[in-house]
Image (tube, rainbow, N blue to C red; front, side, top):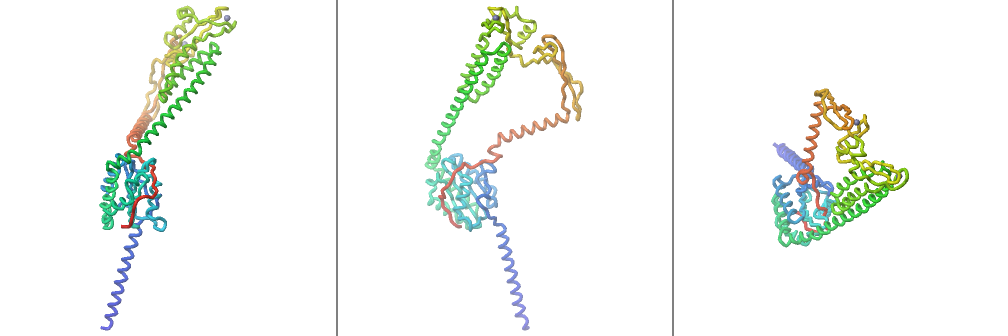
Length: 440
Ligand SMILES: [Zn+2]
Ligand SMILES: [Zn+2]
C-alpha cells in the first residue's frame, strides 16, 4: 500500500510532462506559420492588375471580403484618384523595424498614390507583431490627420483583438474611404490635379510644335539640296532624281500623319516644285545652249512605238527637248502611275512585262510542296516568260493557319486586357510618415 503515493506522483509527473510537450508543439506550429516579411517581400497587388489594392499573402481575409475591399478601393480611385492599399501579413522582424518605419518603406517603394499629389493611404495589419496602422501620403494628411486616423482605428480595433479580421479591416477601410469621399474632400483631392493636367498638355503641345519645327527645317534643307542637284543633272539623271522625289513625297505624306500641322504645307510646296522640276531647261549636250521642251502634240510624231505604248499604259511619261541652235534632241522619261505593275522584259528590254495568269503544275500533298508557274507577257514585243513558284504543303498551310490564329489571339488579349488581365502599377506617391497606429 505504501507504493501507491509514489505511483500517483509518477503518473502526475508523466501527465505534466506530456501536457507541457503538447503545449510546446502547439507554440512551435504557430511560429512556423508566422512568415517574416520585409518591405521588399510583401507582394504588390498591382501584379494582378490595376484594380487590385489588397495584399493578403497569408489569407487572413475571406476571398469575398478581398473582392469587396478591392471594389471599395477602386471606386475611391475612380472618384478621387486617391489610392488606398491594404496589406495584411503574418509578421515582420521587430528588431529591425517599427511598424511605422516598415509602412513608410513599403509605402515609398510601391509609390502609393499619385506621384504629383501623393494621395495615397496604406492600411497595414501584422498579426505576429499585433500592429494595425493607417499610413498616409503627404497629399492626404490634411484630410486624414493623425487624430482622425486614431478615431478610425479606435472604432473597429475590438474586432481585431477578438480575431475577427474581416470585420475589423472592412470597418477601417470604410472609415478611410468615407473620410476621402465627402464633397469637400473630393474637391480637395481633385483640385490637386487640375493644374497638373494642364501642364502635361502644355508640355505635349510644346514638344509637338518643337519637333514639327525641326522636321520642317530638316525637310526644307533636303528639298533645297535636291533642287540644287536637279538643275545640274543631265537627261538620264534628272528623271531618276525626280522619280526619287516622288518616293519622298509618299514618305512625307506618311510623316504628315504624325505632324499634321506643318507637313501639308511642305507637301504642297514639294508637289508644286516637282512640276517645275520638269520644266527647268536642260543645257544642250552638244553646244551648251538652252534647250526647249516640245509641246505635247509633237509626242506622236517623235515617239517610238514602244514609247507610245508605254505612254498609253501609264508606265512612263515622256518629255521631248530640242536645241534651237543645233537641233540636238533629248528625251526625259518619268515613271507613271502604272510603273510598279510591270517588270523589265528580257527580250526587248522595255519595262512592259505584265503578269497574266498562273497554273498549278504539281499539286501539293500533305507533306510535299507543290509547284506552279506564273505567266508574264510583254506589252511591247509580246514575248512570254514563265516564273516557277513553290506552293505550301497542306501541313505547312495548317501550321501557318495555327500561327496566325495564335497571333490574333495574343493581339486581342493584349489590346483588351491591359486593365483586367495584365499587371498594373501604383501612382508613384510618397509619404513622410504621417498616420496613426497601435497594438491590438
Ligand atoms: Zn545645241
Ligand atoms: Zn518585250
